[in-house]
Structures are given as structure tokens and as C-alpha cells.
Image (cartoon, rainbow, N blue to C red; front, side, top):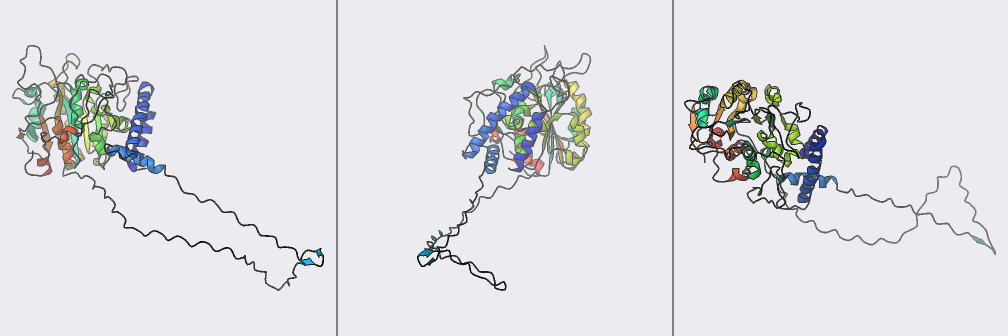
Length: 460
């Protein structure tokens, strides 16, 4: 098997050991169907088979190659010599007397029939040149990307003159480049998070926040651009995302979700998502609506989500050394600290103020880490928008949130007015690591902020 499949198989076994009840049953059922589809597609070399399918299918096929065996041939039995006739009586031939000093008789086999001449071997033909594998992708000068996803109370509340986020606007903005025209695709967080890691556009189910793990209908198809049609929350196993791209190359990824615990035990748990029953988030706590990785069978079925999608408490440990820090870290606070209106305890800061207080606590850990100081990029972005407060005027651009880039390779105090969105976030990240572009990230209309970070002139 390929090294990739061995790693994922071990991860799947380890992940299964941590699951019980309905979540385990759902994982097993989806894994059997999904993995069968991968193997079938790869074994028949269908053109639409994804790289993920090809790796798994051909690995399984290679392990089932029969080994040729050779049957042992039986030794011929020695023929009995005819008895010697003496007179009219037949008596056995006397045994020869062999002196003790004489050498032992040498057995000489009888001549056998001449074997037919061997058929001439076919002339060797020139071997077709083997297809050379494409070189592995290479990261540019930025090799560690940290994405913080919050919920916006509006562009002015974050970056305006009367900002409700003084740490973000007063301390962090002067250190980096402000993307003044960054807009989300929808008000809810689920479709924006999915778009930011896969390029898949919003659909009816994701706009509603995916309260249940709703599969796409059987009539769903995938366009040539890699976009899944229909409405659903659980993307098929062949649908790729940024994490599966990292799984196939020598880069690492981690999701860090604050407050992620088992809904049954209340203990910290990896990759928590609603199964067959609607999610009932605890006020101010964790919600799968903030965790886009849990929406992909390509991460669920072979254990990558259960391995790499972790409670945020693991972030502090991983930041202590460059070797343990992932190349790509997606960080989301809980509903209160993300800035969702009405999700904080009574009397505590809420909305934009709660998100700003959380940033002031977490960002220093990131920017002072060895990995960030060496070659890091911090992206403070917003994955959703709070509805306007009662009586407040509706903003001219309700989905405009802005975003901030901080790195030694960004212009301190700079601004960029190019129109960006979650597809741009994905495209820029893929370009920083030399990866292919997925779905809407490959759309010519999708802008990228990667060129200046790569040290290139110009951009889209």
C-alpha cells in the first residue's frame, strides 16, 4: 500500500476506537459505501476518479496481486530390468560381484526422446517511456498559515472610526495589511467556512446552518469545474478540500475549535458534528456550524477529521515548537468568543467586544510562536455576519466584513481594496503552498492576495 493509505487506515482505526453509538454506525456505513466508490472508480481508471480515489484503489489492487507458483514435478520411477533366460528356465540374473576397492558403479540414464526445439522468443520491443510523476508542490517563503474565523457585527464595528474592537483596529491593523473589500458569501457561518476550505458555493442546506448531517440527493452531480450540484451538508468522499490537498503532499493541517466536547459525555473530543439528530448547541459553546471540516466524507471516512480536527486546547501545545506547528491552522473560538450576538453570559462582553477580548488573549500566542516568527502569516477573517441590531440602519453592504493579513512579508499599516471573498481565501492559501485550485477558487473572477506575499509583482 502507499504510505498515504497506511497512514489514513491507521488513523481510521484509531478514530473508530473513539466513536460509539450512532456516530460510529454512521461512520461505518458511510465508509463502506464511500470506500467502495473510490475503489470502483480507481480500479476501472474512470476519468472522473479523483486523485484520492486513484491512490486508494490502486493501492488495494496492488496488494491483491496473485503470486505465481510452480508445481513440483514427480521423479521418474526406475524401470525393472528383464530376467536373463538360461536354458528352458528363467532364473534371475546374478548380482555382480564388486570388489571392496572398486569404485561405486555410476548410474547412466537411458537416452530420452529428443525434446522439441524451443520456440523463438519474441523480439523485445522498446519499452514505452514511463509517465513521470509531477513534482511535489512547494511552499513559497510563507510556510505556516494561521486562519482565525470570527463572526462580524459589520465592517464599521470591526475597522471603523468607532470600532467596537479596539485591539483588532488599534493594535493589529497597524501591524498588517487591511483587506477593505473582503465580503462573505452568506450571513450564516456554515457556507462561508465550507467555501473557504473547498471552493464549494452555498446551497439551501448550508445557508440554513446544517443542523443535521444531511446528505446530497442521489441526483446530485459534479460539474467539470468540481462544483457539487443540489442541496446538502455532507459532501461526497470524492469532493476534495484544502485538508485533503495537504493530506496528499508533505504539508500538515489542523483545525482548532474552542469548546468542542462530546455531546454525550461533555469531555473534549475531536471532530464533533451532528449525525442523525439535530444539533442543539449550548449557549456560548461549540457548534459544528463553526467547523467546516466535519462536512466532508473525504475527511470523516478515513479518519483525517478525527485525527486533525481538535479542541483548541491543543493549539497552545503545538505552538511551542516549529516542528509541531501545522503548515495550515484553522482556528475558531466558541459561539460567544467568535462574536455571535446573544451568545455570552448576561453582563459579560458580547458580540464584537467578546471577539476582540478573545483576540487579545490568543493572537500573542500565535505571533510569538517560533513558526510564525520564522515564516508565518496570520489571517483574521470573518465567516459570518450578525443581523443588524433592532432599530439600527441596515449597512449599504451587509456582507462586507473586511479581513486582516499580518506577516513579516506584509506592508505594515497597508490597505488593499481588491474585492475578496472566501473563495479568495482558499485560492490565496493554495497558491502560497503551490497547490492546485479547487472549484470556485479556480474561477478567473476569484481574486488572490498571494502574489505580494510570494514576493511577486502585480496580482489579479
